[in-house]
Amino acid sequence: MDSPGQDGQQVVWTVVTTGIGPLLLAATGEGLVNVVFHAAGAARDRALERLASRLGTEPVEAPGSPLLAEAIRQVEAYFAGGRRDFDLPLDWSLISGFNRQVLRELTAVPFGRVVGYGDLAGRVGRPDAAQAVGMAMGANPLPVVVPCHRVVESDGGIGGFGGGVGTKRRLLALEGVLPEPLF
Image (tube, rainbow, N blue to C red; front, side, top):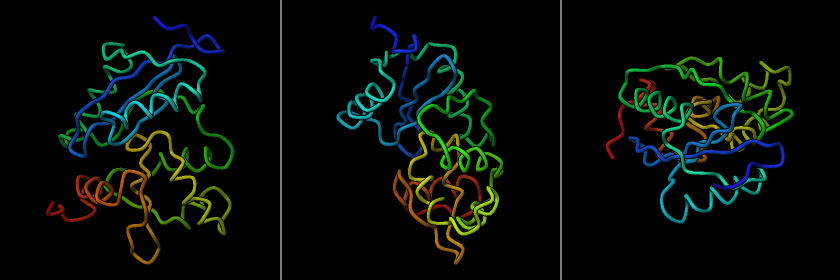
């Protein structure tokens, strides 16, 4: 087994199959630290290399770890329509400052609701920082669980998304915000 990182923590990971493709879930002793879209083959390997670089240790595949087993259960329930909120400990160590503040505020946006980039900026006391909120969404290390798909443009546009706009549409359809996509 690989040695723990600089702070003594081990990073464990697994991949769960979902309605939007494979998601890589990674956790530390603090909580879920990373969710990565389209995590198969070379893309999964690149995500694990980035995670190892950022956390200072090689992630170990461990789908049976208690935290990952619970994360899998909750993710599967969410995609099956049986769960609206995630109740998992989160490790925020991959994000800091304004981005962390915005993402923590985002966790208060409920299932089936959306918020505009500017509205979210206002919620964190920076009403003129809509563009910076967009950057925070792009830096979200915990998509789906920290629901950046719920942030949309004020003119009704869907906005961008790290997992692809089609994935964002599917997530919003799952939550009843948009009609089910035809693809």
